[in-house]
Length: 137
Image (cartoon, rainbow, N blue to C red; front, side, top):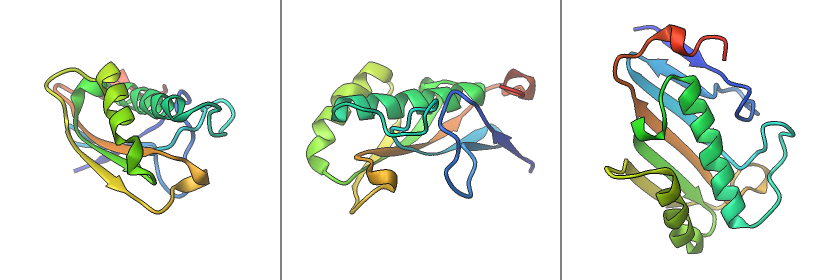
């Protein structure tokens, strides 16, 4: 099976040896997103809610570049250094997703890149995927 690399300037560029997403068949693996502003590559200013929204916005941009949307996400992983933010993440997630919700894990971690307070990655399953829908985005 071929692997197709997904890239968009509407999400932060990779800050390491990885791609924003990789498509294998109709499955797209979205790399972890932290609350980086794609224009500045700096963490967004603001409170935890602003950070969570920026992460969902970054995931949205990568999902769209792959020809999908957040509605196509089958599995979402959330990483938090402080699980006390779990309720806030749930509240904001309801702004971005509607039922049926994806499968999900929320994991407490010691730290995240650049001192971020949240990171998320996802697995997306596409119907009728067409490579021409996302090339050169």
